[in-house]
Image (tube, rainbow, N blue to C red; front, side, top):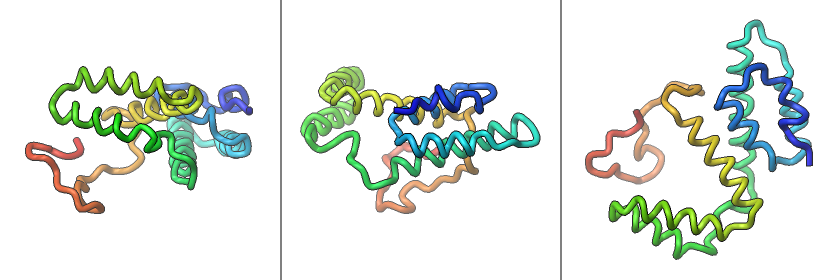
Amino acid sequence: MCHFSDCCACFVIRLDMWLMAATDCLEYFPDQLIVITGEHLSQQCADEKQRMNMQKRLLFDTISKYYSQERDPLLTDRYFDIHMGIMELFEKDKGHQAFEASQLCLRLLEPNVRDELRRLLAFMAVAAEPEGYRLQKQVRIIGRYCNIQPRKGYSGIK
């Protein structure tokens, strides 16, 4: 397996948390995709900020395209009853118990799936930070594409 951090880290000039989480995510990607991404990361830009933004956009696009492909899900319906129980705990405001149950449920996953999920969730957490890199202007779209209604008191995207 080609390790992204081994062959491509030299292209990421100053690793911030966003870039570190994104490159960590690529560990389980196919070698060919990693090589292509590395080649694109090596493209030159006028200034460092522009280069870093281009790198972040490229990494985000690579990660989102990879997980948008037809592939086996990381979380299957094998543990559907457990997942539903965890959701019920959250709904009953038993967050601590739900967190513990989630940790135990994750231990049931295959080690490689658990690690890939950990990497993806870590990237999602960093990418979602309000002061983090923004790919586009955020707009409030709750319920626009799905027939869902926000919970009472829900204020939408901040």
